[in-house]
Image (tube, rainbow, N blue to C red; front, side, top):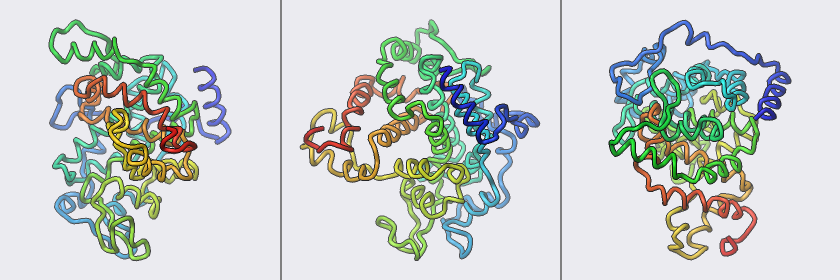
Length: 376
């Protein structure tokens, strides 16, 4: 932990970034709940609760590409001139294992650093019918999961299991007799935490630049679930996967991959990453065509289960695949949309035996970068 902090501080100094970036944009305004104050939701900063100009007109509009406006006029307009706070992102990565770096600090830093989070409040709904505010809660839940997984030996186990209170202090086991309390205690007491630690180590490897990439990816990974932001394929890029010129890409992972590859300037948090980390983020949006359940239960031949995944791994490493699985874990962790309540998808909904089998199998899957499907 001390080595992590020392190396991270040295990187900040080398880049001439201040080690104590102030969150002035938040300190000058109050955080408040807008409407829904249900237990488990994070507040929406005032600057986000004020809808962007033209947002009402966007709510029912279709994705559109206007010459000179990029693949989607709404996305281009909302992100025009916006910048991610690169120094603050680096500070977040440097401090994320600092015991004194609390949940509220991390939340406020996330809001200040990543302008893409504002897109969830610009109007419109996702293909599943959820509005942007729920996708915002799910995204913050995934951000918190990154924070907790990188602090498993500090307070991350409690955070994932029980979440934190309205005072932002991470909770511990309580004596409640309701089913949810019992399930959370059982997860905390019986989960094989070494498996989560192993995936974290394989994915991040103590490298602050990979933490930065993961934080940036997590901030914008679900924005394309909002239909009003879906990109339209330009003639110059057609065909893109199965989409022709003029088609709106209605698969949110492929839609994000298209923007990352062809219009990186529209996602400020992606644009600040070095080329190697950009490639890593784009890799996470690949169509893996992999059924984890089949693999752990041996429900197919090695070729049928693993050939497509091995094809995707060409040019990538085992640690890149671990990064993908770490992202998958954080995405699922926040799926209930109650970030202050911990990783409830895992503690309350997901069978622990299945989660353990998935985690146990990941080190074997990483060997696919160098071994044949049958050897794996």
